[in-house]
Length: 384
Image: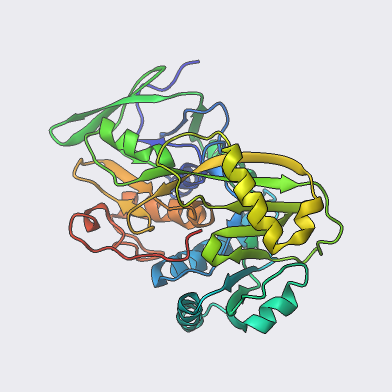
């Protein structure tokens, strides 16, 4: 396999961020774009291992605004891109089991409603009425938004990749970036396992691997990879088709319908940072026990599949957009578990910043790299 020796921009990472950025740059008429993915297939890194959830329900205004911009792009994806992505609006139902969470939920719903997002605040009794298959005797409150739901990650990635390729983007998988040459504070070349590409612009969208890519250019990026895992069950006829995406907030435990069964996951609060994507069988048992406690029906289920993936976590659980001290080295990373749903708008935002020097669709200028050294952190609490 041969690769181009020059490019106007090299995009590193073939998940949803890279695919979206490539498409939106090409749509703006930008030429000679090279997208590199180290895996054999696009979208098989963090994007392909996520739960596929998309939601409006966040605790900060900027994340809600990103959802307001991004989720309608997914709704019209087939119309614009020609690819079905199976956007199933089953709704997210977040459950609070202590007073602190309940107060936070009330504040979040007020903020979301103010921005035009029609999230509902539920009482504990309303939560129990909506979830007859689950044991939520301790539920104090809940929040529900019908337009939240699930989407096929592969459909989104390949829709953007295929369309971008038709517009002239060179998307190449199975190529690893092993070096970045910087001279006089400017990007000059990307070295890969198949040779060098001379370029003046690099977009780092490598997700959990973005800090490694940053170091190649001499840029420190505060993104930490953290393993998250989930499993699916065999068909469970008792689970209704309209079963929502349920999150037991205090336990970071979630359930959503997957085919005719369930997808169940839980965050391991003791997980150590690292790039291990093997399933921790011991923690899976912890997850299973917690799931059975909340939904006794799970006890009679058998496991259909299980896998692990990586979150790309920043200190404030918000992404990083924009420039660095190295001229021509751009970032779009650190989404802390909710990157897939914000991928469509994020690719568009980076096309705006790279071509126009500013973010137009959503003002994300406060989510720059310098905020960490300047202590301008904006903490997101609705991260599972």
